[in-house]
Amino acid sequence: MKTDSKHPAQPEEQAIRHLRDSIIAGKHWYIALLEAVNIWQIPEEKVGKRKYKYVIDGDAFDWLLLSERLCRTVDEMIPEDEKHSLLFNGEPPLQIDTGKFKELIGEQKYLQHLNYFYGITVEEVLLQVVEDEVRKERSLDYLTEESITNEAYRRIYDLTQPQMLALFKREKSHHRLDEMDITTLKEFTYWSFKYRLRTCDKARIASDTKKALTWIKQKTGKNAQGL
Image 1: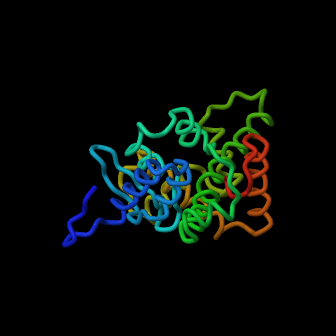
Image 2: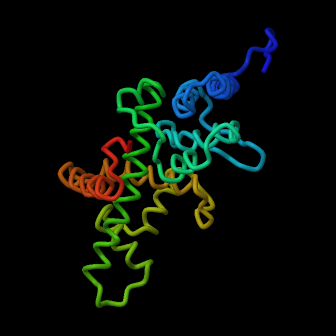
Image 3: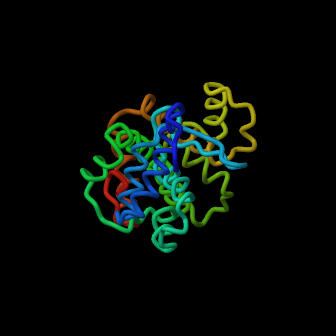
């Protein structure tokens, strides 16, 4: 890919070119991908009809979503099974330690990745774990999924899901929460995490977070950084 000297390539173009050129040169595609993630700059974009929002609320970075976007540019150069394992199961083809991962994607993106992991991934797991607790405690009762979810929300946030959604809508000026897409759901989850941090006592926050992290460790073997 040639670049007009009067119109230098944008970081996003540089990231895509780096990924392709590095793979051609013999570098492992996963390492090249993480380096491309580091180069990338824009927080969201639209490609065709698909909207990608890589950074939620300005500071939670979904590196796997960006990885999906980048992989689409080199599909024919990546083993399908390895790509699928990374993008759908979060299982990389190479095991690298946290320090190396941080070095490859850059410190700022790594910190934003932690925000995403704790604020969205862990928060989603926490809700699931508490919903399971409600089901087990009330196994003999007839409960709708809506009532289970609302009880879980009460235990975590002291509010029902509709009450939380109403607050979220008011604070973020969302007008169509009846048709939440994946991005809006992530925004709501991250907002819920921040709400929990500012309204619950520290001991309860620590206990709930540990509960979710323990589940993640038992089910996936991933550490506290989601790697």
